Amino acid sequence: MRFFTAGESHGPKLTAIIEGLPAQMTITSEMIDKQLKRRQGGYGRGRRMQIEKDLVEISAGVRHGKTLGSPVALTVTNDDWKHWTKVMGIEPLAEDMNPEDIKRQITRPRPGHADLVGGIKYSHRDLRNVLERSSARETTMRVAIGAVAMQLLKELDIQTIAHVTEIGGIVADRTTYENLSVEELREKVEASPVYCADDAAAEKMMQAIDEAKERGDTLGGVVEVVITGVPAGLGSYVHYDRKMDGKLAQAMMSINAFKGVEFGIGFEMAKRWGSEVHDEIAWSEERGYYRKSNRLGGLEGGMTTGMPIVVRGVMKPIPTLYKPLESVDIDTKEPFVATIERSDPCAVPAASVVAENVIATEIAKAIVEQYHSDTIGELAAQVNAMRAKAKEF
Image (cartoon, rainbow, N blue to C red):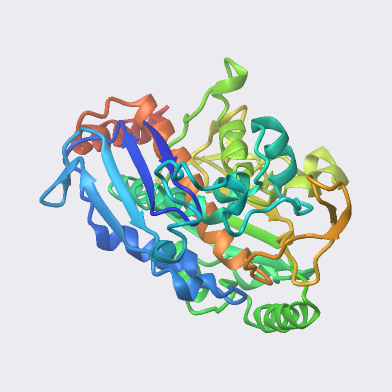
């Protein structure tokens, strides 16, 4: 299973192609639109979310709500395109038009963005050519793909949930959610404006976001993704690029503005004795093998253990500020304050939705690669056989 995305932030459309999905799997646009709406929500989003109302069009690979086994094509139309047709037009410029006369050209790279390095790499003198693709708008299609992956996982009795655990130094109390089921945690998260399960912390997070907006500043935070029902043995210890935690870490770090990732208790391990880190193994007739704790986050030796996968990512504050940082004009080499594009004071809640979907995609890819998957029924039978094997081993 693999996918590609295409499209620019202010271009006409965003597109994704997914290849390798099993046939006979249920997919509807409503399933995908629900995730797209969640990505556009969350306290702290800016004006762009009122401009764009993302809705997906499934244009290939699905008939009457079921996958065909052929590539699935997804498209989201940018409603704001009508205001950008001259700036972001596809066709060549008229012969009598000077490229320097194009409006909204950018020659002042913004600190913390891909602008300057991307311009150097691809020889773009108008840095809009960089920021249009490097924009987090691309995560629209990552979420659309993830929604499809989450449906595949659902048909295999695998559940996913993501939530915000920290914004601007305000940390949710783990005791408020660590013993909740996935369904209970989802209910609390979906009721929270910041997608946080700790109501008291959520209130403080919203206050901090309001303060950041007043200051013209931005806030980052931490999101946690939990996946239950994953069979033991996904990934492998035999070679570095087959390790499941390595694949999940790469997926998390591929999200715009993410700068760190950890599993289980993560960096806390550096402060503890080994006896306080590793998960003791137990067995019961009902459960088979299980771990008495889950401090390693459901992964050992590059493989899933059958315990819940717990992975967290840290998102830096968005670098587009309304009190912009200094930069240098690439044409004049003179210092200027950086160009201001539309910005969100905090996008951490939305980033939790993106994180859930990209992690779900990576798990789905691993399952499809490991098991025969021409149809969803055959795939489910093999996953269940692996569960039985692990239990009876």
